Length: 223
Image (tube, rainbow, N blue to C red; front, side, top):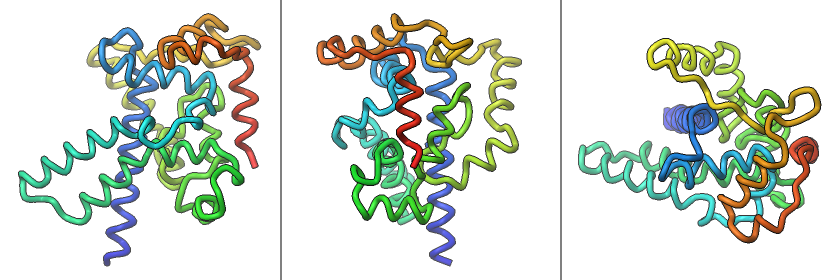
């Protein structure tokens, strides 16, 4: 029974990671005052240059999730529902970006333990996650395991949610400028350079990333 509860908690955490990832990709706006700078701009940069964020440490990638996790723990404690399931859920959620980062690294970079966990599908593999970075980049949003994405994409959950949001609020998903159309990205080099400058400041200004760097980066993920 405990093993089953652990599995269910893992799958729920994976689904929530996908839900937030979908919201970032589909409806995040870089001009928004807080989430634009903290979430959307790094997200845009990541779609143009998937391996860029692998150079960052755990704190840089996970501090925002840590704050959200502490908030969840506080709410669970105040409401009397602070069980081990909540602790496990928060631990997985706080490390979602780190697990995501491992899916963009090679076995040599990850080391034998992480690579083994990916090989047994306990963690999401680079091959699986590479499908999210394949145009039109509107699937495989969950980042923890490889079990939830096939189900959600088969039933087209994200398409259904976007249809509901359009019918109720008349809001369409954000255009992903990293998607290649007829051999060119929708906005080209200018959008990528703007995202780099806004996200990483002076360090990114020195980078030179071509419009096809996304394709090379995704290709490097495949074993």
